[in-house]
Length: 300
Image 1 (cartoon, rainbow, N blue to C red):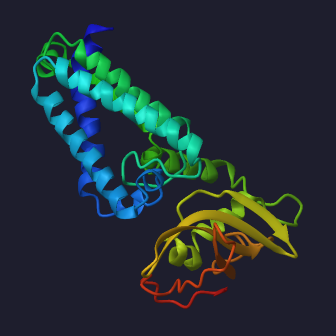
Image 2 (image 1 turned 135 degrees about the vertical axis):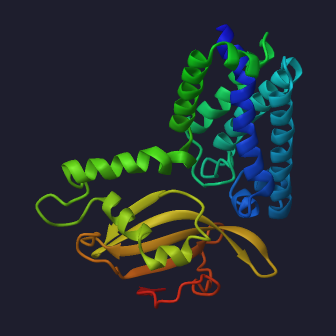
Image 3 (image 1 turned 30 degrees about the vertical axis):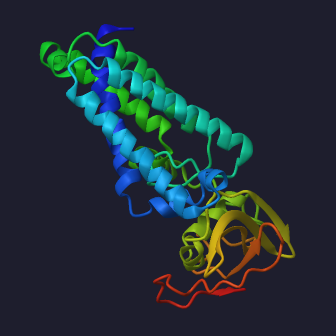
């Protein structure tokens, strides 16, 4: 292991675990995000899943404090590696048993488990191994070689941005907006007719219907099909019925196949919530408690 990387690993891992741990332990949406992780399947209870996610956050904060405070982080480094191995195992189990579930890695955003989730967990594992082999306190290394230390920190931050889907708004989305300004939108239909599915998703995610239904949605787009001028987009979700607890559902949105953000700002959207186990329609008042003031142009 390169000495400067090993010596700075406690700082890098400590900051990462402090951020993710604080998000899990103190985040307002922790319980909501936990409801779409595999923890619900394992613990068979949404409330306990939220408690488990907060407990993991507390463990991350404790390890982060030890990493940042210890001059030679052998024990904290080993603990970090154990956490990283646990994250990799958890993600593997979730991917096999509930591939539609959310990662819950940072408790700040939702999304399916993918290669980037495994990459970040693997970095925690490797960072723990590096921290355990540190021979010099990280603050001493930064004072001794400030230039190389700064370069190492910048490179680590760039790598973390690349593998963190919840940080895409920091760099990836601005880059995509710049590309559209320079080269135009890739979502425009060729020669008329139905727009690409990505254009329908883009229009949906800017609609009031999506704003009202988003508390139920727990996944990215899972399926789509066209039917008599309507494009149906299917998402997985979790609906907490009063007195019945959380249950998995499918949330179906139907939009005009020719509609895009270039043709309408207020699309008509049909929304249906279907029980995942029984395929029965779930009566949901999407306007209740949504905070949406305007009337939604949607039919159920």
